[in-house]
Image 1 (cartoon, one colour):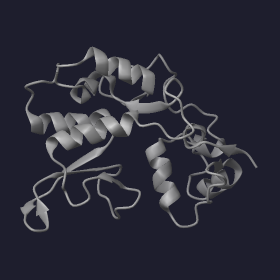
Image 2 (cartoon, rainbow, N blue to C red; image 1 turned 90 degrees about the horizontal axis):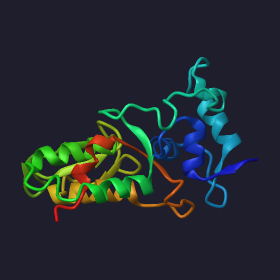
Image 3 (spheres, rainbow, N blue to C red; image 1 turned 30 degrees about the vertical axis):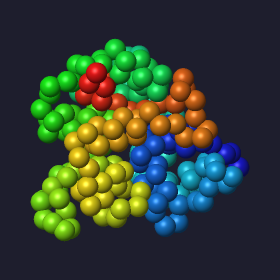
Image 4 (cartoon, rainbow, N blue to C red; image 1 turned 135 degrees about the vertical axis):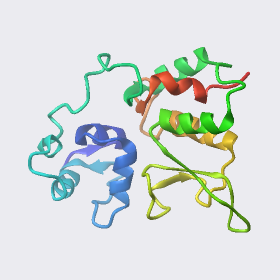
Length: 194
């Protein structure tokens, strides 16, 4: 039985950490052992739901994404270390100042691979705020909605949550090796305005 951290297993299985959390929330997914993912049991569980031609069923030996350093910088998600993301954000301070807030929150969510929804102004249920999720149309709050379950986020809170979601480290991660999927050309929208 091989035990892996969330980041290690996500990379092994050819999926993002966010996708792994979604699978973990499903009934029947193997429980963690001492906070780690049981690689053999999880591979067997996921193999039941994947096509036999899917390279990820072969223990993620096939590369689905371009090799690190060779990815095109543009509007595609690519893996960057938390250290590199922090350096990028430090170099972009003030670049988004004065930007239209509604455009900025859309780009912030896109920059980190999240889905942004805007709720209706329907007091006392919703107040026209935002919600961030890892799937386009969440069917349940647990495991799919990152923040703002009742569309309660302001524009500033969306930017904060996107930045926090990207930079926060799990207990078994370190900045240099923790990888996140981001769109580097859009990270400036997450930087401080000062």
